[in-house]
Image (cartoon, rainbow, N blue to C red; front, side, top):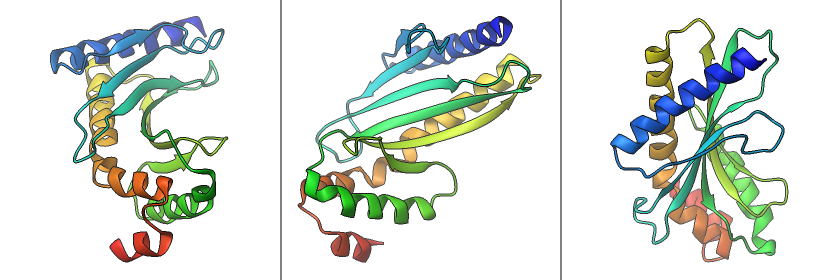
Length: 172
């Protein structure tokens, strides 16, 4: 378990370095969920498409069994963090319909229904050399940043009641 965790940490630190080089101003958090042995990189993407507010990104490895021969790298962007309670059912349906058409990744609500996240995970073989693994992680992170960008404004409008489900469905 410890060797796997150390490898994940090494790969995340290399991704962190790459994010610093492109001036994403990442933060690195060791044991982000206490006791989980899950480190995490967090970023804030201030200028995100036409949205007036930025989005937060989190990049980490999902926990896996010590004997698994793969790592599960995950990139998650928080797109909406304020949702009117009466908008949750329509927003959930819209996210479900939108996710159906995604080639990879998914739009989802957190368990309280108050946060919309776009999440994508990539399986990285344990025997993949670190340069190739970090390249794959960079591509996954880039994908997670790029794909939801075109949807963030309409999702925020749905979350505030400024766009109905019917209007949303007419857009796609």
